[in-house]
Length: 362
Image (cartoon, rainbow, N blue to C red; front, side, top):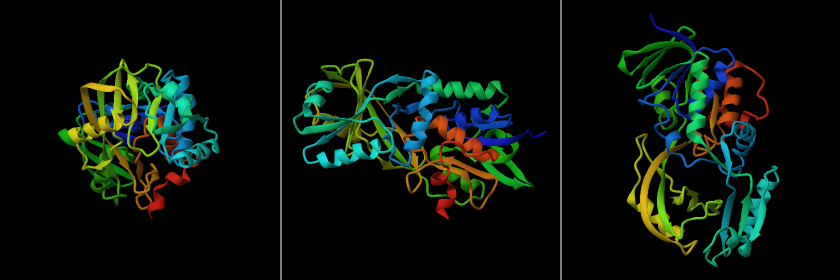
């Protein structure tokens, strides 16, 4: 007999797991379908995650801000601070950056070169000013993800791993879903939380893709001399050419690369790592002694770079929960709550769903 569920969610990374946890607490029968042997293998498991309200831009900020209390109250955040730095000639741009986020209630402190140098030893004179977001925090990604999965399963959700969706066909008012290994399920609604594979899943279900594009992002763990101070904030370039933060005596460093990629098990490229190191050495006089580890993940964006939450405009039983880019973890609580409300026809709550609706694509 084919098992039946109210809602099937394709993808058990942070997006799918958080939504499953939100739904089961409302009494919904949920199936989580994960393509890999273990959930979170791709983007979720490769994040250098942090919670900072400016990351992702003004369109994402309401979701990030609304997620803060749940992440903080759950003990998933540890204080870090984020410092966006600007070069000579970028002072006006930095001021505009600070103005933009202060206007929506984000705490921002403006720093001159001397104040920057106090927080970032060895800073080059080329970097003249910065904007400090003191509320930025590191996120315990693994625990958050596992807690969402545990909440879902305790309340009765089923999790199928190594069960990539291979077909989805309308059957009456719901779906008949085929998975790798010959498993089948019926569900009233199919949720697309497939990350980099979101458009592929839509095609399998006979739904028009939205133009989701995965981009590779590279991170390297390097040993430096001197080691980075443990109280160093997350350092971000105003021009989006690098970011770095300390981690257990080492430095996690990214060239802030975005290289379009097919959906895949992303691997780092040596050139991206070399670019990251080169850009670091324009900021501080630290020596990179060794690259100890490097990895890459895929960040998937809709054409307008905002997430997509809501029922497809042409297929009412197909729900998009995709396009979270690099901010899916820091927005997970608010996004899951918003999506659960939309799925169940509840009032939207604190975050306006309109900017994230699939209907904006026609």
